[in-house]
Length: 270
Image 1 (tube, rainbow, N blue to C red):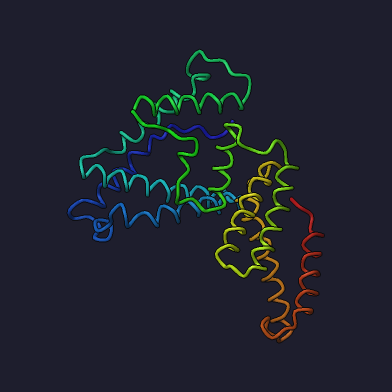
Image 2: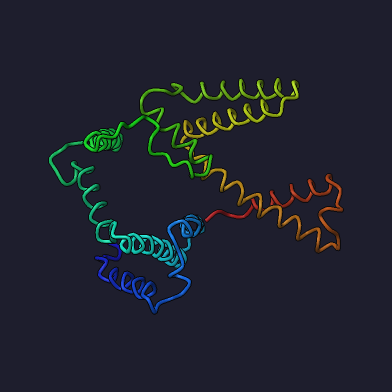
């Protein structure tokens, strides 16, 4: 069994935040607003993801702390307005999790995770109805999400109500269709239409990935890491030979790229 902790030190962080925001606290912290903190919240969230992808537990611990600090920071700013405090945040999420897990905290029986998700959706709809809110199928997907991740989430929500291709083959055909439409748009020379069709292609590719059991955002992030690593290796080889990438013929860069790729493929995976 892993480490068991009850969050007894959470109050220490809240106390530090309150001290920083006190009249004689930190001038920089006291100048911050909810709007000014948005960028930091996004940055810290992605640094958590980077730590997870790197498999670095110590870094993950540190980045979670930075993210938690942002949450406590915002809660304290709201508390100063008289809106809510960190205890309200914790109480609200605790109640929500208990309510949405009746198969754990209640008498509801489920046979698998799929049924859990179905029940979760029903409970969310009931909660919104009680608040007098009309919930549409695609609600709950933040506009601020990276476009590829948002495409994934929207595709999942549409699929949950049956609006989806029956299998991966159907999406694959759609990709071919979208590629053809891009070629037609390029032939027509309409920049706006080209952008429109490229967007449709990316959306279809996102759904194709999901059908194959692949998270498109994760797949692209992994591909970017591989590309960066290989490109830097190419750059290092060119530099070591006394040259510069921008002055090296494409054919030579391709040759080195293939060598780097083969070398990486020959390294045993952990």
